[in-house]
Length: 509
Figure (cartoon, rainbow, N blue to C red):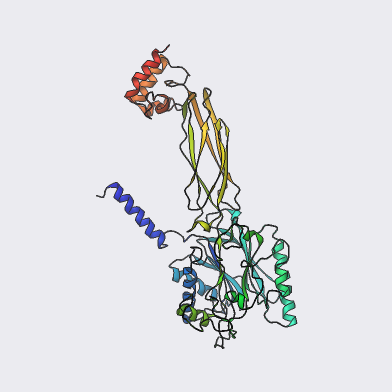
């Protein structure tokens, strides 16, 4: 038989194995969100293989120490007749060895918008679609798993009108107006991500300016490009992956347009709650997580796989991006809100008059992330009421040690006392933001074993009972802790070594 310590270590190792391999716990972490026009794919077994290569590359690309599988895929050009979204669900579940990916596709046909999402990380609360022009926009409200409804955010999956003639430009601007009208109706401070194939001809076309106009749903470019498309913005260009045509009918001509984007509301750039992981977010120090997969800035007006040497992605990924779609997926990471857990030390049921008695409690930012910057910091404050004293503030980053705080019992008077410890956080969208601990305790003098505030002959029998039958004593005097009131030698417990002290208290004048 294994010794207890070895058994505990073995169990911990088994749990760690299961967590790391996704067999018993969901793969938590900051959000990795992707937008991808998949050109009505996957529709064949070859497509499935190419898509899995791309999804694997998305999950392993590390930025700011973050590398994880995607949580939300906003997909354009989905085909319900070919089952493209269902195939994507199957491909992701197979690639990552899970069963947690699900899809949202509200209407049938070709050129639809859909979401594929990891139900271990996010839960859709509501999904609806509405026409903005020639196609519908798919709006979904999400909640983070392990958080309450304060963590909600919205995503829009869109596919704007293509083309660059006057009619196309006008229709795209109408689509932008309709999209903004819906987003503005959600109210100020909403956490929004606009994703999709916008087909913008450049940074200064009317539809871009409409998206960026002031209002509740004002859109911001996470990478704040001053102009595009051009040579200086080439690493963010997404279309086309091909320099010549392929049988799937996708566009060609090489990487020279920024059609695919993620745009965000101001609430996604304030560094609080759910927020973009990148230097345009307030207070963030690090690299932009926003990127077009496979575009390392080395190709302009050419095929994404024009050459392989010195590229960020291996040849297998570049070839998959070239063959699978005429668009590149756009990926960005978003931090989680903080999550407050408070662990209160056991409170004493009794205390000696005039003594100093502290109650410790420990405040943790338990946001389920893999790196500290993957979650908002937890800013907390606490206060006490009733017969407790103490207040304070603190800040705890995710994955840091808990903040340790103390409350003091008021032992200045005899009798039953009560108070509360209240811990709260006003960190944006934080989970478990308000927690209260009620404390009750009884104050008397050392040796008062029957709770009448005196030490006399009436305490002799209770003292003996506490020594000989602690369970019976607790039933008779539930407000007295003998290990506190009967501990004369200060060794933390009542035992035979306290008999002399008790006798001296009885004989004292």
